[in-house]
Length: 130
Image (cartoon, rainbow, N blue to C red):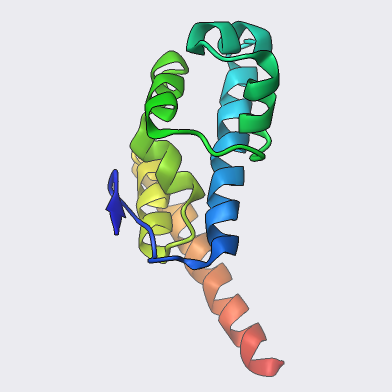
């Protein structure tokens, strides 16, 4: 299933769904802190109790799409970027990596790409030795 540009496997096993919920909550909490906002302030802006905010950020409660959109709007965090960052789909991970390179000058992009390719090669070789 395609969700806001992110591929989500059918029933991608409950474990993966839980990891996605946890990842979204953690990213939102990180973004909130980076902007210097408290849970209480953001909870008030979203219209939920501070306890609910805490539970959403910790992944104990799934965030509805409506609330997720509100979160992203208030935190100036594009929803597609958030979802790409927490996806475990290799294509989504590649898109997130590509987006992170866009603002870098060409020499730095080349350095990152070469390091990523070398690291992936080393990891594949390490897997074959096991």
